[in-house]
Amino acid sequence: MYDMGATLLDRYCGTLVDFVEDFPEFEAALKKAVFIGDNAALERDLSLFAETLANIHADGLKQECERLRNGIGAAGHDKLEAGITDFLASAGTLSVDIQMAQHRAEESSKPKTRKYQVIYADDTNSILAVDDIPVTLNMLSTALAKAGYKVTGVTSGAAALDFIEKFTPNLFILDIEMPKMNGFELAVKLREAGQSAPMVFLTGNTTREYLMKAVKLGAVDFIVKPFNADSVTVKINRIFKGAT
Figure 1 (spheres, rainbow, N blue to C red):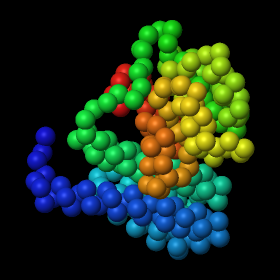
Figure 2 (figure 1 turned 60 degrees about the horizontal axis):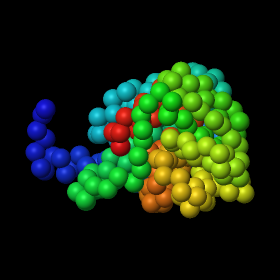
Figure 3 (figure 1 turned 30 degrees about the vertical axis):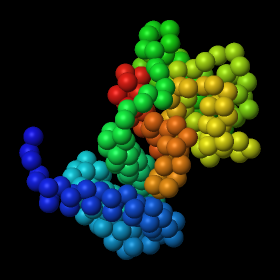
C-alpha cells in the first residue's frame, strides 16, 4: 500500500472533514438550483462538488457529477431532477460512510466492549424494518430477501413494540423521520424492553450532529434515502458477519 506520509495524510483527512461539514450546504444549493431552474448556479455548484470529490479520490461519484453537468440544458427537466436525486443520495452515503469511519477509528482506541451479539445462522437472520412508508419497506424486503434475510416490515413504532412482545429480531432497521414515534424514540423503547440487537437507521439527514445522536442510541450504520439495494445488502452482510 502506498504510504501517504503524516503531512499528506493529515491534509487528506482534513479534506474529508471539510466535505462532511459542507455537504448539507452543497445539497441545499443543488436542490434550490434545480427547483428554480437556475442552470448557471447548478453548473457552478456541480463544478465545486466535482473538485471536492476529486480531492478525496471519489472517482466514480466525480464522474457521475460530471455527467450531470454535461446534461444541463440537454437533458429534460425530469431526467435531470432524477439524476440529481440519485447523485445526492450517493454523495450522502459517502458523507455518512466517512463520518462512521471516523467514529469507528475513534472508538477503536478505547477498550472494546461488545454492545450486542449476532448469532449468524440460517434460522437467526431475522430483521425488523420500521418505516411509515410501505414502499420503502417493500424495497428493503425485496433487496434483503434476495440475500437470504427474513424481513418483517411494520409502519409504526407502536407496531414494532407489539412485534417484539412475541419475537426477537437479530437486527433493526429504523426510519428516523416517522410521525407519533420517531426512530430515536423507538430506539430508546427497544433498549428499555431488553432488545440488544444492532440498529441501522434510515435517514435523509447526513449532518454529523444528527448521526452522532443516532450512534449514541446504538446505531451501527446508516442507510441514506433514497437508497441503493446493493449497497444496503453490503451493509447488512457486514453487520451479520460481525465486521462492525
